[in-house]
Image (cartoon, rainbow over all chains, first blue to last red; front, side):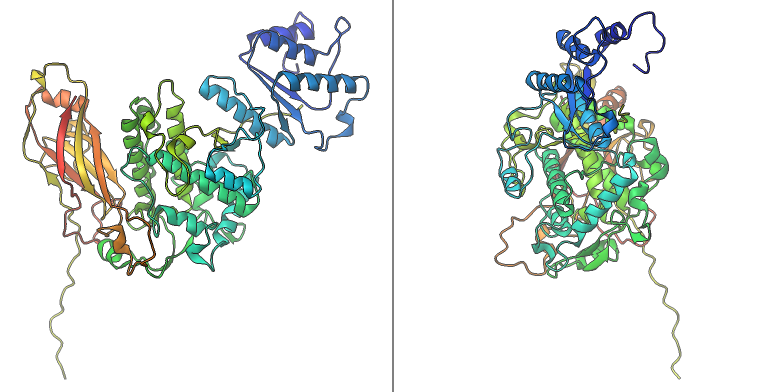
Length: 425
Length: 166
């Protein structure tokens, strides 16, 4: 109501009139029931809710966690307190609502819910059945459940690396550092460390699916998802997500590689997003590689990049063009080609990203591939686009997932979205 | 005292990635029973075991090279990008000795195919010609002027190439 300005009508009428023109309704409820006008039995807040329900607006309700600390001066006493309790119970019966804590937590949840609504054109329905909202019909999730991952309705929001706050970036760096520290002694045998995860794509496992349009994109999705879950595990932080690097936009055209990845030192410490110290297994022979490429690769080295001119990165127009393709094979082939192009752009002649055996050791790999996954998802959300049904049971080795398990990223518990700024009143 | 012989000049290492030029392919798009819906250049079984590279494709310009402007004016119709393995004919070749208990399946560096949609280009060029040559010019990630790479072999290796009209 603070933005209503002066109007020749009462606050209740103005509020309800604006509601009629709204596309959707977002209700955020903390500890105040709100103003009750003299000619009404319920507050304006509750009237708005009732009106939105009557108008069948898509409704998204967010209720503050009762255990989250709140300023006592912002907590309403009786009789509003009892009315609020009744109102919240009413919401609980009518709709599935999300519980929020901090402003950041609320922002993520609102953005995620809106992201689903706007991309799918459907009202996002939180499932009321415990355990749904995360895929439970595959081995991986069963394993993760056993490891104590909470069953939650929360959806993790992957963001652009350029939109991460300083705090988020620090958390991400901390997570990478912790994951990279895993397995130093055990090498590739420690299956929760960075080296093991990177080794799935190239040396030593070589599981990547280049040139296979049937599974290249689903496999990539499973890979980033898997990596993200282990990144969370390594850092004991379930809010960590792999940010995407959008190389299409003007900022990339001027800066090239984002500073988050290009700064070698941050706050006096080595930046884990800048490089990784690779220790290859002894049984790997690099003679042929060195002979052909004349690149100084050895058993122990730090990843490096030799980026080309930023102007040669793919453009937004090029990506828009492939998003218009309706045939999945066409789309997958072309997106894979852009994937390869950016790999070579980052790696240059000798950089790790330019060659399959070493690419995934470069920390920027994950954010580049999250971008590829994001474009895949954007394509999927276009009306009429889908993968051929006969691909659904293709296995995405070694992730214990099939293509059908990864088609809906919301079932995997994440989504892509720009950061949404919300002022909590 | 042993006299020094003439200084032997070090061989200059030059990169000379060979381009591919096809024989003439006969296509008469003006004589099709139905209007041209889609045209693709399809390259089958590309070898990805070596360099990563961009393959720039030109129609009816066998003289194209890495300096040729990539525009339809010069016959450029598109490109593909190969992410290579860096010199290994098979993934197993990475291993000095693979454990007899390592049951992981071997991965092939052969890319089944690349398709480059050339519908509009073929419509334009097909109005004037019924014979087409396909030229593929390899461009390395660092550009083609880097002298520290030796390439005595063809970067571009594949089994078949053709144009499919739909």
